[in-house]
Length: 262
Image (tube, one colour):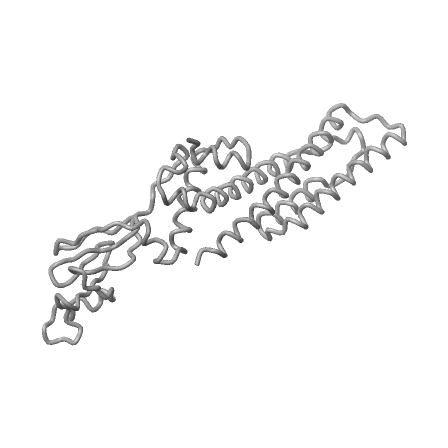
């Protein structure tokens, strides 16, 4: 079966930064799990027993707790002394147990019980899609989130490359290209306004075509380097524009998926 990396690349094409990709997979699944209602996570939950001295719950999302089938109320750890105080109204008993979590360790009183929890899966590029029922059921949420992050990085990398380019003085081109590209970067990364970014790209390409036309009409010679530069800019902005279209589509898909979590 395909790996999660291959699934992501099905949307964005080859993506070589496997370190970032693995990190985003972890972020994606944590974000998803933290938003899912307990009732849905119960389908994939596991028992985490507390033998009476506490149990480490790092890496889990706790859904509920019980002692021999009696539901344990999960309380503020500031009440832990009262839970053990026979004179307190908060006293935990076998038929009215209580639980608290402190410093990543869970306790059920009196003398232990069982936490019902969901373990956050450890995802990486090489994780096989569908290797667990949870991944099968929520693959789209995880993969599309990561694909969006990949597209953002691809666009930022392309913009960073374009901002290093500049025309020589030989052809007399005075267009402040770097400023226009910087504005595209602001639209994408800061404002996330893909419509304005796409419009600015169109404006840049129109301006380049206008420069070419005027230079050719004037009879001025254009250096081979500037010709190559114009082609590089045109190709680069077209690639950014295509990525923006896909980014907009995937963002819409992800928003729709997230709206149906409850």
